[in-house]
Length: 403
Image (cartoon, rainbow, N blue to C red; front, side, top):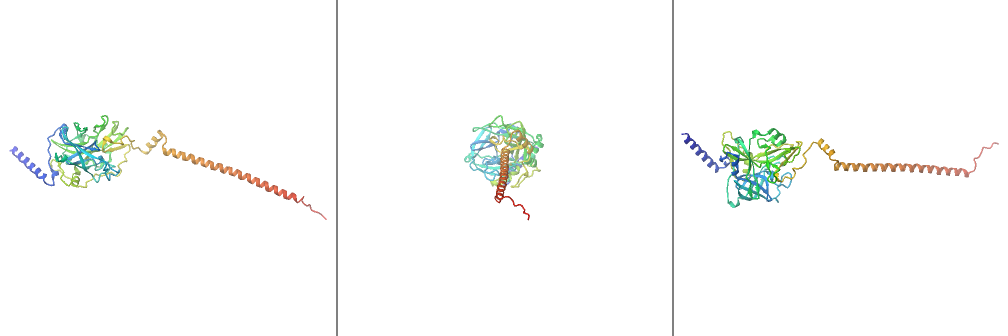
């Protein structure tokens, strides 16, 4: 009897799933993958973004064989405000069929960053990426995890290539309950205000370009029993300590990941089609149907002293060795210990020039004063001589005559 009931329930669930597949509510599909260990993720389809033929650290969350999510920070822009993309960059997507088998590389036809993406804070750090499917030679569906309470644990994944050959993915199991959320929030204000939309930990794996350099994982899969679906993509890192290079173990590095579930309806509005999403159909499930959803963006994102923030393609980052931000008092000490700055030298030179000019002015003034006194003496002497000469020409003074 119980077996019959279970069979009927399964049939009913399957019929609902098939019905939903043909309706606008495709995002309600129940997706089941028979996986119970991290090594099983190796068989999942994955993808990496290539820029000008070079692989990046940016993984793509595939939804179908023709589109997916990617971090908006991985795109090249013409300005710091991310208002327009650099059209000279050639984007491609390398797609893995799982178990080190490759679907090949396809050209990207369109990238749409989230309109609320903030490059200063990395808020809403997602973009919809569209590409060809090699002339229809393959077609597949991947599912986005859409109900975070479903995830008993997470699998963090880093995919990489050697030429056109896929390495075995690096996979690590992780539970949010074991994370250092207090320091994650202290190091990054965006995470402090948006913990439901982000994940954070200090896990890393060797870079594909430099085995001595650590890099964050590229993607996160949510695990619900034997079900797995991709849940988040790497967004950015906050680094502080004695050496604030993201490549160094001497500092403290906290890595942040953007959870995609609240951006599904925005993706649907861009793609004009249904997006495949997994959840477990629990009664508590609630869905964010707002296509204009946004994280809470901090008003002052960069006022944490001693912290440097990196994002996007970590393999080719160009600013990781920049000095960390410091309070003004520390900057003054640093200037004293490393010599005078250019501004200070210019100020000193101008001061010396002004002092010399003042000294020359006073000297000339003094000389002019001496010349003026001498001139007056000569004038007095000349007029005195002239006066005496005039008196001498008139003879001796007349004396009074008495009669």
